[in-house]
Length: 245
Ligand code: BTN
Image (cartoon, rainbow, N blue to C red; front, side, top):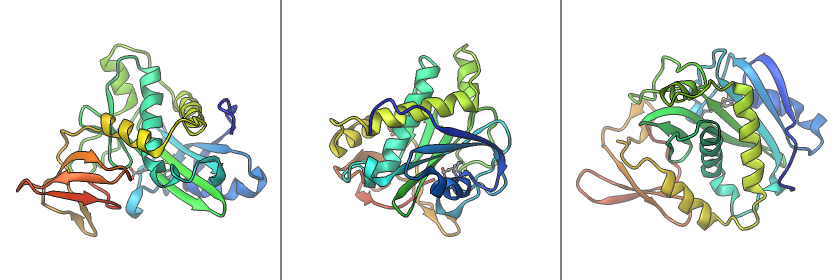
């Protein structure tokens, strides 16, 4: 897929979820990449079936691409790639913003969550949902982790406000740049994600009813993109598919 894929973003008002809206547009798109940017969502969802509170003012964005546009070695680490794309998008518009990522799918600034992503598939398409707090930090925190917004970061650094549409275009641009980089191997991607991780965060495994009390710290990623963590007793564990608070 060429690097400069012109943005093909459908701007919509209120939807249930941009994931549903994108699924409904798949047939008409006929294999061409497209995205949906909604003003608000009434049933926004996060990872693990959690609710993603979606008032007007933030970015609710879903990208749809044919699965063949991502090399097979990158597909399993697509959440990591998406995190790096969001980080690059924010850092390209807010100069000097020190944005980090949290494995596997969160965007973090100063220890607070700014956004996250959710990767699904349908037939031969990948459906990549991204939620980013642009103007509002919804009241629900990530089980103790406070959230912040892109515009709070901009204000802190004395820079102009960003709109969801502006951010969505930047995400589109950085996403296609990254997936069309033929030199990008999984190893390189994992190394970049490792370098961008906020390793100072106190992490907890999610459980069906809340969070596990054991405090974990991110140490490094292995070559598959799995997270090696340290436990309080100094032993290590490898997380492959868990989500963390
Ligand atoms: C997470 O951190 O749990 C992932 C959140 C993903 C939210 C986005 S908002 C756009 C898209 N539509 C949804 O319903 N969810 C994703």
